Figure 1 (cartoon, rainbow, N blue to C red):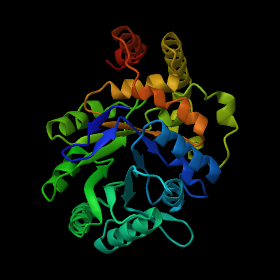
Figure 2: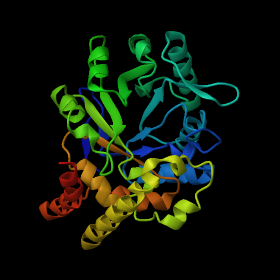
Figure 3: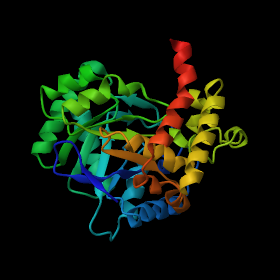
Length: 322
């Protein structure tokens, strides 16, 4: 799998990384329903076998469980892949989640993630959400201190605006920005992506397959049967009026993929990676067979005709807005 430099860091990462949001399982606000830990470990190892050299997780995924499962999956694995995790979302004894970027909270989170991941240093530590906004500078400054202490190698942000990135840049360099980017969410193309390109900040795209909507495996019946604790049941992308159009787009991707021997999800990933600003796409998998059905998007290149067909799908909507 080809690799790209993550911003100005010395880390060369594969164009696809393993996303471990869903494998957190558990009963928390943004869970994907129940998850089998054995399947999670098998999925991570299948991704490593496919050539992936980085894993993205977060403390809040499963309220710490995702980080623990990542550590279990990596037992005895050498060389170890890069480990990227996040801070700022914290929870209380009842599992209620809140935002905190205060110095003592960031330090506490970092120490806990190091223990769960069983490492001496986190390769990329990211502020998960820029909330509370007035605490951004304090959180970023604390991360620079942890970096000097050798507990963090590089600092990143997630879901930040251009203005917020400028604020933390004044304190210390940003290695990467992680944000949602897919055929369903292209809002970053106007301002954010040009900014990170100019500043040589790496960009990690999460949910490139629209949280499963563009895999080709999603149907209305499957959505109706989702467990009550699957956060996607509340997502606007999975509700009308967006749902019908999103499923129609998935069928278009299926047709393109059939011409090239790729799945709809791989077409969706290839579309994200066709943008030279994107350093890597975060692709989640809950079972090893899902790895085999999507990670081929790392090497797939869409033709000019394929891209034109995809853009044509959006032209009626663009025209109605004009």
